[in-house]
Image (cartoon, rainbow, N blue to C red; front, side, top):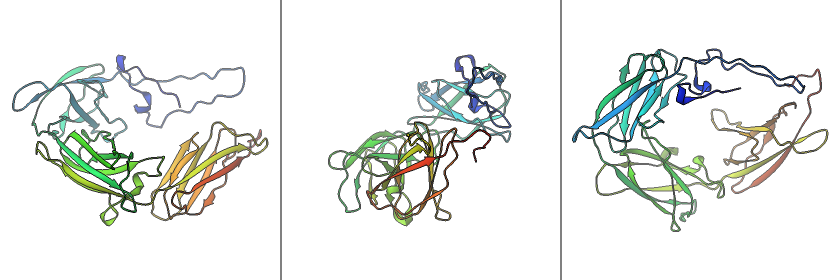
Length: 324
């Protein structure tokens, strides 16, 4: 796959464009002849120039946020504002646009008539200030002991505009605090490769992740306790050439749960390690360009903290033999 982009000229990443039949494949062979490609740009993008004001004071909001989606039945190109006061949108398409800002209530969707290629159109809206809140909490392991230095990731639910990547690490007492948080309901997860915790390590009521409500301008912080399960296991994968026994630098492997209706799967490109949830069986496959894909390998359940190293041999694809 080959992508093109020049946002200054209104040409977005072609990965996000409207190739109705997918992205055309290009093949590079080992020879002295270069592969020639021809790519088609979509019409240059349009922009909505955001001019948002505080409903109470009438003052301009300097850091507006916006999100759009297409309403013509094809939603390959949805997006959020990335260029300050401008929202880049596909031309010649009907749109819905939401706007907001930190400390303000996000609007209901506005219907936007199609813009012409390259058009810049002003977008005016008033936003209701709702203030910002804070939250504090602590993280406990399966034995009820506090966990220091783990990354806590709160996610604001049901608010795409403000659902940014919030994160904070616990202090030496396993506690954390975050200020200037948009009000709403937050769901929590954690992450630490070193300690073996992931978003699957949450222990919550009825199997759900812990949540808490953050109020705006309340003067008091919302509080939450995040309880963790046992640390995950770790799978370390090496892939080698079956003929020469030399390690392959570029490969991809995928592990999938064998438990019916359990969604977990993990795919890695050129990365050797992955956390493994406990108590479930998995299948493992590896592949690399110029080699046959390995047969699925069954992995027995991992124990907490277990590090399991597996080496997979891949057979080179010989001339006239197709890779499965």
